[in-house]
Picture 1 (cartoon, rainbow, N blue to C red):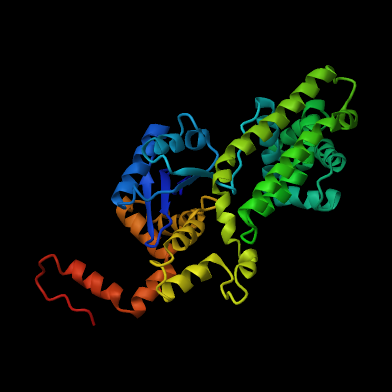
Picture 2 (cartoon, one colour):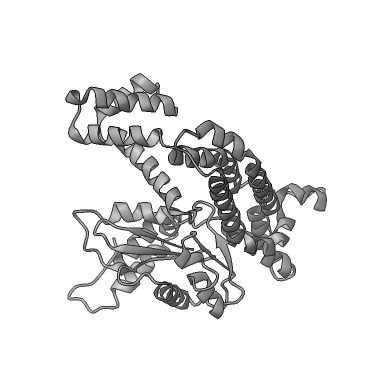
Length: 388
């Protein structure tokens, strides 16, 4: 699993996480080159360092083109070397590659949130007029109030309020906002299903198909949305119908491309815990992890090798690029006062922070102290190195 973030020193840190019996994790500096070839090269070096190039079964990234593209993206270049490494799209991030007009709409919405968070006075006014709701009419009333009482607000607030007043009365912004609003009501439900660990892959894939069917039916709602947002300046009904269809087609295409490899993993549904009771009446395992523990405890991994491999696959294949814990650790380790930490030290400290449970387990068995003492005693010292 690979994802990227920027640390406190404006260095682009690529987080590599390997899901296996032994934990493997490190940060890599990709500030100099963020092209697919360079990132794929670093991913390959990481896999070679972990000696697992012949064991990789899944690669999981976000939806950025440089990572997820099936032609020249990182996943395509890794597949050239490891053909069995299926691509799993991160369910936590679904960035849509939309037309410029749509990107501008989302930029305005982001700016709208920032407009109120910058000032306690603006936030209080929002509570008084909108009552913590954001209907379009009451927002227009709020911005008009700021413009009419410009003497009581700073120049930045007045300038932004005047621009948002014109924006909320414009047809293009309102039409696109209504289009995405109707879709978000369904996509939120799908997002919740994909993030729920209790649902099996077959149910998730059927939910994706239901969402696609619902999106297809949204084409018939053009007339009602157009009538609700149309004004005298709105022209070209057919052009806006085509624009809305293009947005829906874009959503459908990207969603299907993101999860096309999941269909190859339908066999994993055989280990859905809800079917365990039908396999055997007295079967005590309640999850794949319980089953793996049972096989290991009873020393059945060799005699039931295929079941053991299937269980390992189920527990290894991720749903999303779950590297956010490493990002949180990065913020705690690399701060303004401590921003020159080397990459090796940074990765080691982050691994200790993320795998705190494993660290405590090693401490309880004295394995950690013995290994640390053995490492530091390799170098000749003037005095004896003794752990007390």
